[in-house]
Length: 113
Image 1 (cartoon, rainbow, N blue to C red):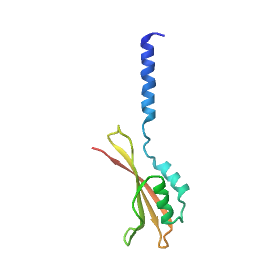
Image 2 (tube, one colour):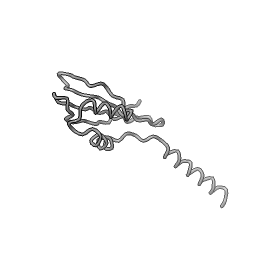
Image 3 (cartoon, one colour):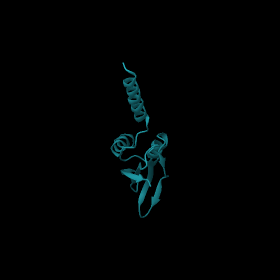
Image 4 (cartoon, rainbow, N blue to C red):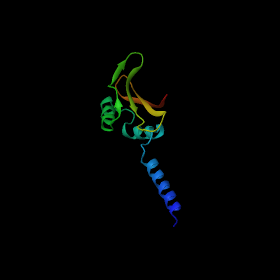
C-alpha cells in the first residue's frame, strides 16, 4: 500500500476517534425518558433529590413558593470542550400541595458568545 494512502487512512481513523471520544450533549428527549422512568408522577421531593444527587445532576433544594409553586430546579450541563455554543438542559419539577410530583419540564438553554 503506498505511503500516501496509509497516511490518509491513519488521519481518517484518528479523526473518527477524536469525534467519537467527545462528550455527548444532553438530549431533552433522552432526559424526559430517563426522568419518567426514574421519578414517576406522585414521587416525593426526597425521591427526586435522591435521584438527582445519585446521577450527579446539579439541583436546588425543594422550594416552596406561593407564586411559582413547589419546585425543584436542576440543570444538566453540556460538557463539550470544543463547542462555541453550549447546550444545557434546564429541568423544573413541579409538586402539588401534598408534596407529590405532578410533572416536570425539560428545556434547552443555549449559551455562547
